[in-house]
Image (cartoon, helix red, strand yellow):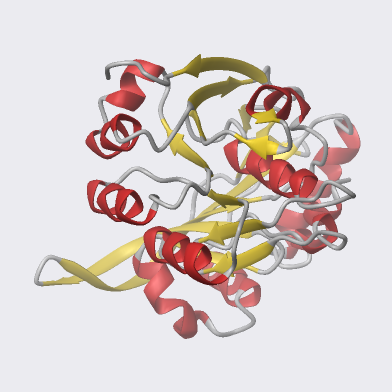
Length: 301
């Protein structure tokens, strides 16, 4: 059983943890990447890319209190201290865990000012998958440097897993680079993967601010950040990306055409922030990434 999954079971309702444990025994090779709790509705696993509802021969059902108590345990009985994150639909926890949260929003002036009546949790299980970046790095790393690159895929394919592995590989060993990771949502850093690394992590920083601070204060040879795309964010990145420090970043899209239809991404590519755009995919349950690489240097976009 994945060690992160083993840790997580201790925070779940007893009946849910027991059902998942029994299910794993009956299907030991399956890779579980998410656990989704729903108040008064079935618990669901994402297992080897598929939705699994039937657990241990019967459907597991959580109460609304089960959902709240699970969130309380995950946040060490400090749900209120995560209020700002919860208003954005998630909380990030130590070890790279991310929990998507649904409930009833309280809105004032068009802004979400609170969430109550939690109805479901989507718990993403981080994977300390190392050395899954060799195919990517063989393309974008030349003469000890990394070409600025944007990785894209639909959600759930493994962009964060890939850039986490790349950050660890590039910041270790005799040829280690000074890597600055702008980890806005606290999803990239996993302690055991970076114990021998010289990477610097800016956790919780807005992406543009983190890039600017990293460039100005950390003397990085590479900056890495996850899930970019907004127009305001793009303008800020362009403003600070004029120092020659390459950026390795990710974004959501299912094709190059879709990617470039996003105004923020299009402006970044037209400004020459990236040399390569790389689409990734993989078969359900497989570790190896399939790469679709496009060199956009000099192209009209």
